[in-house]
Length: 189
Figure 1 (cartoon, rainbow, N blue to C red):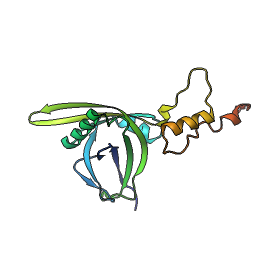
Figure 2 (figure 1 turned 135 degrees about the horizontal axis):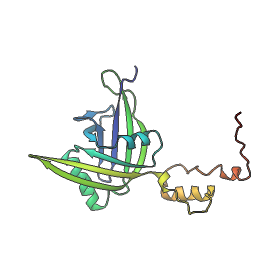
Figure 3 (figure 1 turned 90 degrees about the horizontal axis):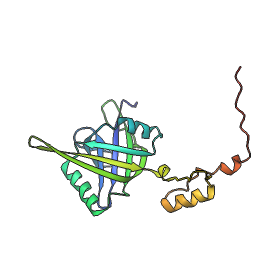
Figure 4 (figure 1 turned 45 degrees about the horizontal axis):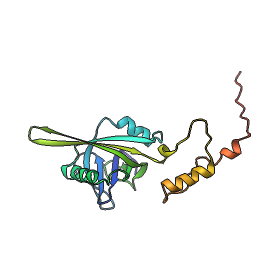
């Protein structure tokens, strides 16, 4: 089967509940038996594209048309102080010509919720909720004091402290081997 369309999936892992949203209308049942609620991505397509291409280390995801029960869970979690630090996954699900999922979704961005902003509006008798989720990932947690040099040992220790369940951060692994190297740029005539 060939891929004819894709679905953008967003999973929010709150301490009390996992919320699953997808960019579409109505509920969506995945192969694992999970129900994903429909929503609309608001003014975030460029940000999502950057995250999917691995270029973004922060993500501000605007969600419109969030069902009231899900917005209430998110608001209650925010009031309880459980939203900040919750995990957010952004995934792509390949679909066939009948818009049925092919295989498992690919995780394209994993982040930690850093801030959440709620905006409720009423149009006629219909209340609508808009939620903006601001996420960071482990790359935004790398700090460097001006004029200092990253150390492989320090960065691995810092990543183990920040994200103890993950593999060690190998970002600086090759820096010691590059200390005395000279890079020759090619000459073009």
